Structure formats: structure tokens, C-alpha cells
Length: 177
Image 1 (cartoon, rainbow, N blue to C red):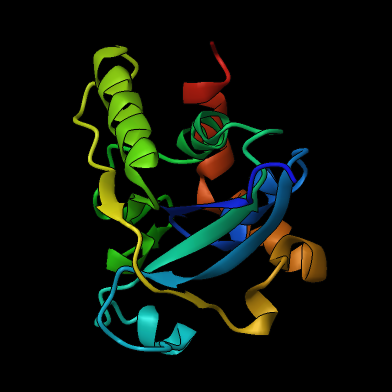
Image 2 (cartoon, rainbow, N blue to C red):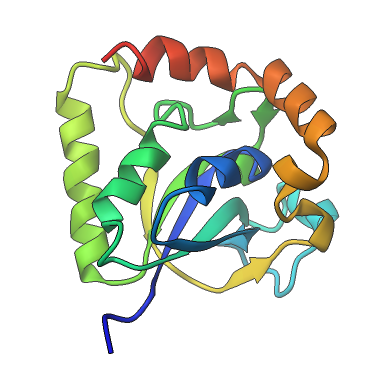
């Protein structure tokens, strides 16, 4: 029997960089790149990156909460982003690259609000935490070439990631604990 799989949805800037951090954890079944939070049905990458659809680039994670807790997955998310940047993430600028936690139930909403409050009071950041906590809405899977990009386009992924400033930020802010 066991407990049913659950979903976690996070927007953390470019979705290429948001797959690998979750992909190797026990209890994570899939990490899918896609779009959520906007008004356009079945948007394309070209439409979303204009910033006119209201969508965020996001990842939808399917996981077994008996193996990996939602709180752990959320902790991994926080440590991939700059939660004080409301204009995008690192080199990726614009509305589609903003950060958000899309909760799928009340337990996830409460956990996200608690984690955000704890982060705000941690003293880690001087600026306010601007990552939004929003109800999960339709998630549209991105085009095939975006899926598992770090595996299928390894060189392009490494180049993009190394130019983004994300790794330097993570090292400076999150790895010093």
C-alpha cells in the first residue's frame, strides 16, 4: 500500500539549473521542467521568456514523502536561489525567472510559510525575502529539449551555469554554514 506520491512545485529562475539539485535524492521519482502561474494555456518557451504570459519557469517534483520529506525538498530549493531578488535569478532577468513556491495542499503552504519566516529571521539576508508562496495551478511541461538539460546538453548546461553566478552565490551564502 504505502503513502501516495506527492508533488512539489518550485520556481527558481532558469529551470535548467533547478533539475539536477533534486534529481539524485532517494524518494524523488521525477523532476519535470515546465511553466506555471500564468494565464496562457499550453505556453511555449518562446512565449514564456517574453514575460507576457505571467508564467514562471518551474520544476514539478514527484516524490515519496515517506522517503524524503517535503521540508527537505524545500530546503534544497531555498539553497539554489537568491530569495531576495524579485527581478529574476542571477543572469536570467524578467518575470519568468522570479522565485516562488507553489503549494499543493495546506501542509505544504504552512511548511513554506514557516520556512520563509525562519529564513527572514535567520539574519542570513539583509534584504527582504521576496519569494512568493502561491497555490499550485496548472503546470505545463516544457518542450522535450528542456527536460534533463544538464544530462542531454551537458556542455551547454555547464557553460550557462558557470556564467550565471549561481554557483558563486550558493558557495558564498549557503555553503558557509
